[in-house]
Amino acid sequence: MADNESSPHAVARRRQAHYWSQAELARRADIPRTTVSAIEGGRLTPSVTAALALARALECSVEELFGGGAAMSRSTGPEWAWPPNSEPARFWEAEMGGRRWLYPVESLSLNVIGHDGIWQGGAGREAGADVAEKTLTIACCDPAAGLLAAEYARASGFRLLVFPRGGGAALDLLRRGAIHVAGLHRSTEEHPELNAATARAQLGGGYRLLRAAQWQEGLALPPDDRTRSVDSLLRQSHRWALREPESAARECLDTLSGQRRLPGRVVEGHSAVAQAIRAGWADAGVCVKLAAVEAGLNFVPVRTETLDLCFAESQMHDPRIQALVRLLRSRAHRRLVSELPGYDARETGDLFKL
Image (cartoon, helix red, strand yellow):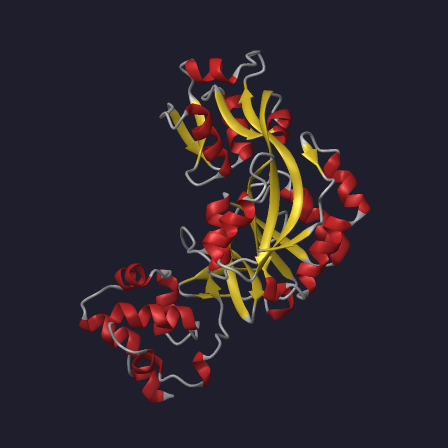
């Protein structure tokens, strides 16, 4: 023990030989700086992914850094799903496939859940396996996801953490194994296979789609704007609330505008589009009908989309996934969804293989 305490960790020695700071190594390895600090301090056993990333950045083998063996077969310490913006950082914790993940607290309007701990200086108070193993994580842009989380907790005894992300970003988190479920809504009545094709292109095989709902997406306008023509709206000099690139809403607007660049600012999420228009700094934007109605805005429907929830087939028998499937198939939930403005629950709960 004394030797370990007096001798720098192999990661620290090699980092210092390159004259790099912890922040520089973290950037090169694409992992949080706090993770580097915790590994060098012996407070965290790295996941296989983090160990390989460090080895590549330091141009050596994993064995040279960590010695290999059983300790590297599976991480016992948590890993950030994405780095916190600052420290101290409040976090939630969830388990997935034997790995424990930490999530910076965000979107308390969707997650009315107290944080599990505080992270500072490369260490944190952990929630423990009991809480982590009873947590399901989902990334999607459904403005009704907070309602889903409340119904899920009430029906299952598990908790559901919702992280607002567009479809592309959500699938990327799922590909990394950092979340359980990703939501996407690229499928339309004209192109019903786009969700499956998008997920297959980004993830490959071995995944399933769980139908959450169909909904109306269109243009949100101020309450006093009675324009009903999409062409007329696009010809006018509007200040647009633009969704982020690779989101389905942005693709919808790009299709409507013929890829013409429109003036405006980028916001994240359907509700953010509606609130920008309600606040008066945007004149129009693409969002789902629910977000527009809740903000008291006018709405011009453009197309009907399908919202699917994607998860790994290997997780099919996880009790948390099973609880989600049961909830979406329940009569009470389907009725609740069908009563939301612009939502259709006739296919809610259907399962599809990629």
